Length: 164
Image 1: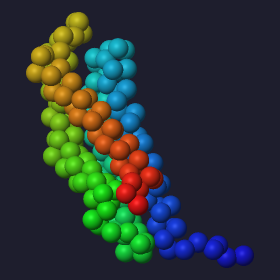
Image 2 (image 1 turned 135 degrees about the vertical axis):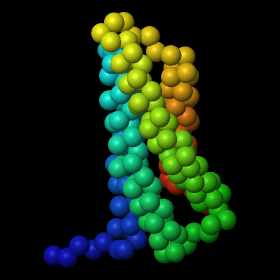
Image 3 (image 1 turned 180 degrees about the vertical axis):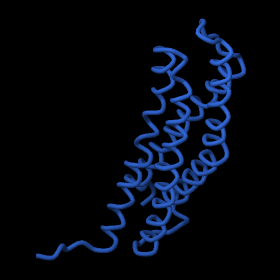
């Protein structure tokens, strides 16, 4: 028996799956750093490597899929780019793309070797992380929290479609 699924429904499924798979893992990033730091600062290089991998190979491809399927859905649905829920969501997607490409990925590329050097300098002794590293890591955590809130707002806008 053939599946009775329209192209729009398939696109919606792919869109939602991309959000779940691509951005779901980024929510776990908010606990990676504190858990690693609580265990031992020596785990922090792994955290930065993992965040870099998640952002490169999950979040960025998911973002592309979300954009492509969203554009397709706009062309097939009875939607208008001027609707607040559409323009608001698209603004959020652009902000997240800029953050991923211009902030998160470069930050982890910079923080991983920074913390590796600091750990190497301490040898087997007690680890004291530099103020520069701590500030940069704290800022990344704040930016990650804001990005998570933006993702939730985007989902709210797409589900409720305020103004319709």
